[in-house]
Amino acid sequence: MFRTKAAGAAAVLIGMTSALVAASASPAFAAGPCEPQGPGITVNLSGAVNPPPPIVGTPFDDTLIGSPFADTIVGGGGNDLIIGNGGGDTIWGDNIAGQVPGEDIVNGSDGADLIDGNGCDDVLSGDDGPDTITGSQGNDTVNGGNDNDALTGADGNDTVNGNYGNDNQNGGPGVDLLQGGPNNDFLDGGPGPDDLIGQAGVDTADDPLGANTCAASTEIIIAC
Image (tube, rainbow, N blue to C red):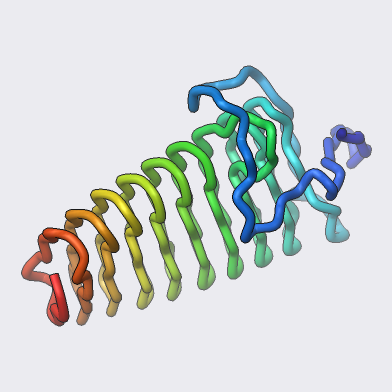
C-alpha cells in the first residue's frame, strides 16, 4: 500500500515501512523478465527541509531522487533511476517481495552510502563519500567514486571499478572484471575465472579461487 503526501507543488509517493525487507534478507521476487514494467512515479525531494520518511517506489519504472538528508530509498520492481542526493543514504534497487525486479541505475551522490542493487543487472555508483555497494543478483557494474569504498559484485558476471580512493573490491561468484583505479586497492575476484587490473597505485591481488588473470599493473600478487 502507498500513500501520497504533498511536497510543494509535487505529489510524493511514500511507501509504508512494512513493505521493506531487511537488508540481510533475500526477498522472494515474483518471476518475470528483467525488462521495463511501464511508467511509474517521479519523486524529487531535493528541496526537502526536513528528513523525509522512507521512500518506496512502485512495481513499475520509477525515478526517485532523495533529499539532502540520510534517506532510505527502495525502488520496488521495474527499471528504476535512483539518486541519493546527499547524506548517508541506504538504497535498494529491488527489495520488495512479490514484485518483478528490474535493471536499476543508482547513484548515491555525496555521503557514506549503503547501496544494494539486488535483482537483475544494475549500474550502481557511490560518487563522493566512503560507500558500501553490493551488486547482489545479476551482472552488475559497481563503481566506487572518490573515496575509500567497499565494493562487491556478488552473484553474476560483474564489473567492479574502484576509481579513486583505497578500495576493497570483491567480485563474488562468476566471471568478474575488477579494476582498481589510481590508488592502493585490494582485489579479490572470488570464485570463477576473473580479470584483476590494479592500475596505478600499490595494489594487492589475492584471489586463490578460479583460473584468474592478474595484470602486470598489480604490484602485490598474493594469489592469482
